[in-house]
Amino acid sequence: MKKISTLAVPGILGFSGGLPVFLSFAPASGLFKHSFPDVLNEDTGDGYQRPYTKSHSLDFKNYINRPGSTTPPLTFNLRNEFAGSWTIESGTDFAQLIIIEDVKCLAQVDCQHRLGELSNSDISLPFMTYIGLDLRQEMAIFNIINSKSKGLSSSLTDYHESRLLNDLASEAPHLFISRRLNEDPSSPWFRLIRYGGETTSGLKRRTSFRMMQKTVHNFLVAIKPIAELTLENKYQIVLNYWQAVAAVFPEQWKEPRNYLITKGIGLYSLMQLLGDFVRYNPSKEYTEKFFIECLAPLKTDFDWSSHGRFAYVGGKKGVQDVYFAIKKGVGL
Image (cartoon, rainbow, N blue to C red; front, side, top):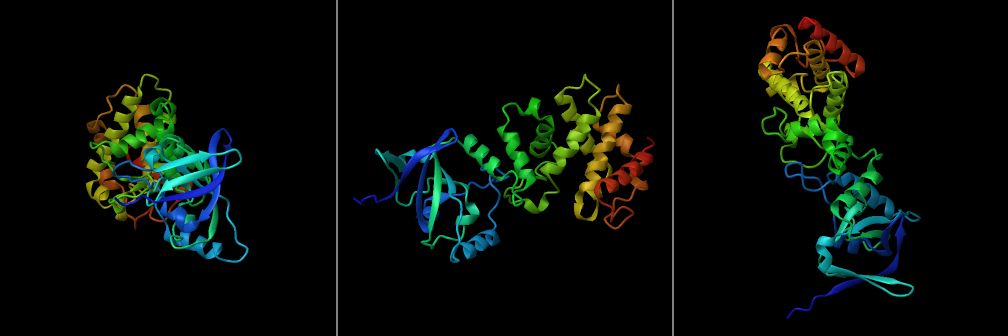
């Protein structure tokens, strides 16, 4: 029978805030061998981290190999799902982390790009690992560490928030509606909104989760006085409206690179117009047919082309220019 070998790393046990951690040092190659990133797969919903960027890792590799370079401790979590592959033995003044050889049990909470190109490096690195956090706790720590990072997509932090809230529908209805638009097979936005992870259909994504949730938030603020609308009503309104947009402008919807409808100024201005349709018609049934009739005057009279009248406008002023033009076009 083949003998199972192990890796033993001496260190100390302590607390980081209110959570127990193990602190130690190890060769980069060993940490790489026994750890893994948990990248968000937008197609399955598994994972939570941003995709790997090789250039970031190469920058750190070049830096850490210079004389006098250093780094804060790499941060991991010893996943409970691999509990049979690791153990921590504690003594009076020390502790020892023991990992079965060839098992990846350390989730890379904050070190993916520092370790990414160090698989063959024996340079010593400090590390800290949480002990047996569940995935929700791990993701929350990752979000706290990285939420202000310039390299982390704002859509990804929004997506984390939508997964971490206990009652998403009541605490953040704008995130609830935006996620549902992307995950509802009946929605014209189905799998077309970028969360900031990896996806096999990445090139088809038309807008970001950050942009969509902001426009939905603005819409919800605009119709707030209409108290009788439930969250389900509001979702159906947004869903029916975008189904109408796709029906009235089929070519523009199918060719997003050549038209402005799903770009920033189109998304913001059209959602602002939706607020007007609802506020100015409080007793209507907001069906897809109703919105098709509302939008019909724009079908031939408004140029959504990427080379048309509004091709080079941007920012809040550009959004308002487009909004006032389409508002006038529908007779509001």
